[in-house]
Length: 631
Image 1 (tube, rainbow, N blue to C red):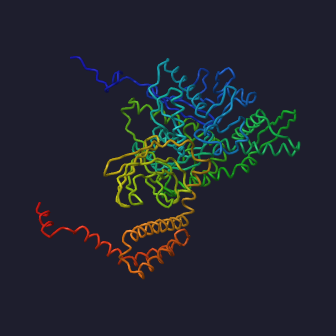
Image 2: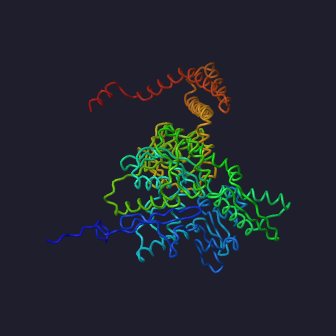
Image 3: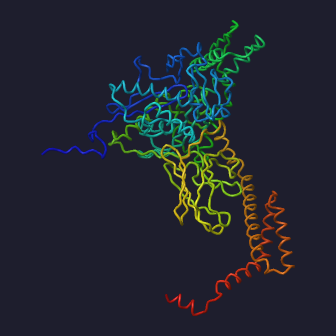
């Protein structure tokens, strides 16, 4: 008998048709695309056999665009229109960019958006990234004979925030790519390494790319890849090592020639390229030449030794080692528990990296898979699974959110709803209430960070819930729900439980976290814990004082006639004392004043309650209430 071909609703494809999906490593320096072809993972090369695509885009005056190696070749002659390292700019604002003056192209804030000046007009980092993604998409479709892709998994640094992740998805949409998932780069690397080697146990993924540094601790157990903790620096990468050599070369040139004036864009690009080439040469040599040519014809050749390079950059390496230590501390894991450290990213080819990692943790780093390709390989495996091609593979990815998410409460305090290192996707709800009698609206401020006070955290979004029925302060119940999807993107909703009135927001901030903010948040969250708790206690006492003062004023206005002149004067005196302390920084004094006023108004509160009961009973007999009870 004939067999029926059954497909999912809305799908025209046959159930066992192989769907074309790719994994894309959108890097700061280089980008790659990979796919699972004939049951093996292949990093797809261009027509010249090149697997690495330089993440460089050149804009011409006629509107045409050149990407990759051809754009890089023109970087020195047309520096102002040749954009590199756009990944370090995506989702950010001008104030967030360190050393912007040393960039070989001009950037500016325009209408709240960071833009790059080019001969083809201003371009955003999202548009630049989209051009790189288009080239990778075309490369993959050419490999598949012109067949369109079903989707792509695109990797991002684990420490990319909401704005940076959303900007990456926007770039993919501009490139006509369907994003199956945004996957954290260390997780993708662990996936490739774990499945390729059958590894199990605790592994550290040390990922130093061109523009970012990530470290993640993963537990690999029988096909389950669970991220236990993540850390790093979203503004530390190979570019920073290049910049240190760049600055060293400038200092050496000034020693030889004296003042050299302001460098042109072409001179900056030329010197940066020379610095990068010298750095890369030191991977296999003890010293490397670095030739500096200025526009006025001045030329000199410097010698960069490996010792000089290590002295210049040792503080950058120390930052990465410190971040690894913090991740181990967060997960309550000792160095002896680690089975291996996997090096990822082209910048880990620097000998100083593997040497310092081995010295600091007593483990020889693992580099079985090409560090440039391992992230794209892992992304391709995940893409193949998400489109349904890898039905025989039984494995699961469990990632985490890198920073705590919460709300501002009265007094400028932070109530954390989703703690950092919580597995994603995740949804958590928490009930809040009103502060004043008759309050009919609530302003909701979503923040990100580890500190106890709002001023020390990053603001993500604000929205309002209106239509709350007027009730006594504290009577309303507003349930606020946070949802973080598998891509790490956040949405927040608020619902008043009695009426069902609801408001929500998909958090899409205009800018990402500033260069040092994420690392600072984690560091300050630990180092300032005692100060934060003291500040929180002070704010809580101030909020309670204001609440008590407001309710006391309201009660005196309504039922002040229940007090004798002497009693009223005494209470007024305690109110005045508390009012004078409410803005002070003495939490103990505020607490004592609250307790005193509360105690002195107990009798007044009892009289008010008696009056309310008598008013409720007025005009009724005992029989009235008895009959109500029978009904």
